[in-house]
Length: 138
Image 1: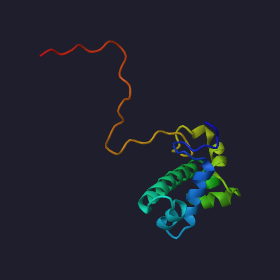
Image 2: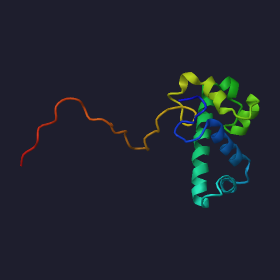
Image 3: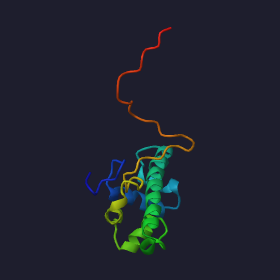
Image 4: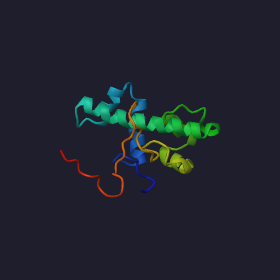
Protein backbone atom coordinates (compact mmCIF):
# COMPACT_ATOMS: atom_id res chain seq x y z
CA UNK A 1 0.00 0.00 0.00
CA UNK A 2 1.40 3.44 -0.84
CA UNK A 3 2.37 5.54 2.16
CA UNK A 4 -0.21 8.20 1.40
CA UNK A 5 -3.28 5.93 1.63
CA UNK A 6 -5.30 5.63 4.81
CA UNK A 7 -5.73 2.09 6.10
CA UNK A 8 -9.33 0.81 5.99
CA UNK A 9 -10.67 4.05 4.53
CA UNK A 10 -11.12 5.01 0.88
CA UNK A 11 -9.15 8.25 1.27
CA UNK A 12 -5.57 9.40 1.59
CA UNK A 13 -4.12 10.24 4.99
CA UNK A 14 -4.17 13.95 4.11
CA UNK A 15 -7.86 13.80 3.16
CA UNK A 16 -8.75 12.04 6.41
CA UNK A 17 -6.63 14.53 8.35
CA UNK A 18 -8.39 17.47 6.66
CA UNK A 19 -11.78 16.07 7.73
CA UNK A 20 -10.67 15.66 11.33
CA UNK A 21 -9.05 19.11 11.40
CA UNK A 22 -12.29 20.66 10.11
CA UNK A 23 -14.28 18.86 12.81
CA UNK A 24 -11.83 20.05 15.48
CA UNK A 25 -12.22 23.66 14.32
CA UNK A 26 -16.03 23.50 14.03
CA UNK A 27 -18.34 24.61 16.82
CA UNK A 28 -19.61 21.06 17.17
CA UNK A 29 -19.38 17.67 15.52
CA UNK A 30 -22.79 18.26 13.96
CA UNK A 31 -21.75 21.62 12.51
CA UNK A 32 -18.57 20.14 11.07
CA UNK A 33 -20.39 17.12 9.65
CA UNK A 34 -23.00 19.33 8.02
CA UNK A 35 -20.30 21.38 6.27
CA UNK A 36 -18.22 18.37 5.24
CA UNK A 37 -21.02 16.15 3.92
CA UNK A 38 -23.89 18.30 2.62
CA UNK A 39 -24.68 15.53 0.12
CA UNK A 40 -26.14 13.20 2.77
CA UNK A 41 -28.50 13.62 5.70
CA UNK A 42 -27.08 14.83 8.99
CA UNK A 43 -27.14 11.50 10.93
CA UNK A 44 -25.10 9.83 8.18
CA UNK A 45 -22.74 12.78 7.98
CA UNK A 46 -22.18 12.64 11.73
CA UNK A 47 -21.38 8.92 11.61
CA UNK A 48 -19.02 9.47 8.66
CA UNK A 49 -17.06 12.26 10.40
CA UNK A 50 -17.18 10.63 13.83
CA UNK A 51 -15.71 7.39 12.47
CA UNK A 52 -12.74 9.30 11.03
CA UNK A 53 -12.24 11.53 14.06
CA UNK A 54 -12.29 8.63 16.54
CA UNK A 55 -9.85 6.60 14.46
CA UNK A 56 -7.39 9.47 14.01
CA UNK A 57 -7.56 10.53 17.66
CA UNK A 58 -6.90 6.92 18.77
CA UNK A 59 -3.90 6.75 16.45
CA UNK A 60 -2.56 10.08 17.74
CA UNK A 61 -2.91 8.88 21.34
CA UNK A 62 -0.90 5.79 20.44
CA UNK A 63 1.80 7.92 18.79
CA UNK A 64 2.04 10.02 21.95
CA UNK A 65 2.64 6.85 23.95
CA UNK A 66 5.28 5.59 21.53
CA UNK A 67 7.31 8.80 21.58
CA UNK A 68 6.46 10.69 24.78
CA UNK A 69 9.60 12.81 24.67
CA UNK A 70 8.60 14.30 21.33
CA UNK A 71 4.79 14.22 21.50
CA UNK A 72 3.92 13.82 25.19
CA UNK A 73 2.91 17.47 25.57
CA UNK A 74 0.74 17.36 22.41
CA UNK A 75 -2.96 16.73 22.98
CA UNK A 76 -4.21 13.99 20.63
CA UNK A 77 -5.64 16.45 18.13
CA UNK A 78 -4.65 16.82 14.49
CA UNK A 79 -4.29 20.59 14.74
CA UNK A 80 -1.82 20.28 17.62
CA UNK A 81 0.28 17.69 15.82
CA UNK A 82 0.28 19.87 12.69
CA UNK A 83 1.53 22.85 14.69
CA UNK A 84 4.08 20.76 16.57
CA UNK A 85 5.55 19.33 13.34
CA UNK A 86 5.09 22.53 11.33
CA UNK A 87 3.13 20.70 8.63
CA UNK A 88 -0.30 21.13 7.05
CA UNK A 89 -0.59 17.34 6.73
CA UNK A 90 1.07 15.52 9.64
CA UNK A 91 -0.24 11.94 9.34
CA UNK A 92 2.13 10.79 6.54
CA UNK A 93 5.10 12.12 8.53
CA UNK A 94 3.85 10.41 11.69
CA UNK A 95 3.46 7.14 9.79
CA UNK A 96 7.11 7.37 8.76
CA UNK A 97 8.20 8.14 12.34
CA UNK A 98 6.40 5.14 13.83
CA UNK A 99 7.02 2.70 10.98
CA UNK A 100 8.27 -0.17 13.21
CA UNK A 101 4.92 -0.14 15.04
CA UNK A 102 2.51 0.08 12.07
CA UNK A 103 1.33 -3.50 12.50
CA UNK A 104 0.11 -2.64 16.01
CA UNK A 105 -1.19 0.90 15.49
CA UNK A 106 -4.87 1.46 14.75
CA UNK A 107 -6.13 2.50 11.31
CA UNK A 108 -6.00 4.85 9.46
CA UNK A 109 -2.37 5.42 10.47
CA UNK A 110 -1.40 1.83 11.21
CA UNK A 111 -2.57 -1.56 10.06
CA UNK A 112 -3.63 -3.31 13.29
CA UNK A 113 -6.79 -5.42 13.08
CA UNK A 114 -9.86 -4.05 14.73
CA UNK A 115 -10.22 -5.20 18.33
CA UNK A 116 -12.96 -7.70 19.14
CA UNK A 117 -15.92 -6.19 21.01
CA UNK A 118 -15.47 -6.52 24.76
CA UNK A 119 -16.39 -9.91 26.12
CA UNK A 120 -16.00 -11.65 22.77
CA UNK A 121 -13.07 -13.68 21.58
CA UNK A 122 -12.02 -13.47 17.96
CA UNK A 123 -13.26 -16.46 16.00
CA UNK A 124 -10.89 -18.28 13.66
CA UNK A 125 -11.61 -17.51 10.04
CA UNK A 126 -10.28 -20.70 8.53
CA UNK A 127 -11.03 -24.31 9.30
CA UNK A 128 -8.30 -26.62 10.49
CA UNK A 129 -6.38 -28.70 7.99
CA UNK A 130 -6.85 -32.42 7.57
CA UNK A 131 -9.73 -34.72 6.68
CA UNK A 132 -13.30 -33.81 7.38
CA UNK A 133 -14.67 -35.12 10.68
CA UNK A 134 -16.78 -38.27 10.43
CA UNK A 135 -20.44 -37.76 9.60
CA UNK A 136 -22.73 -38.44 12.50
CA UNK A 137 -25.44 -40.94 11.64
CA UNK A 138 -28.77 -40.92 13.42
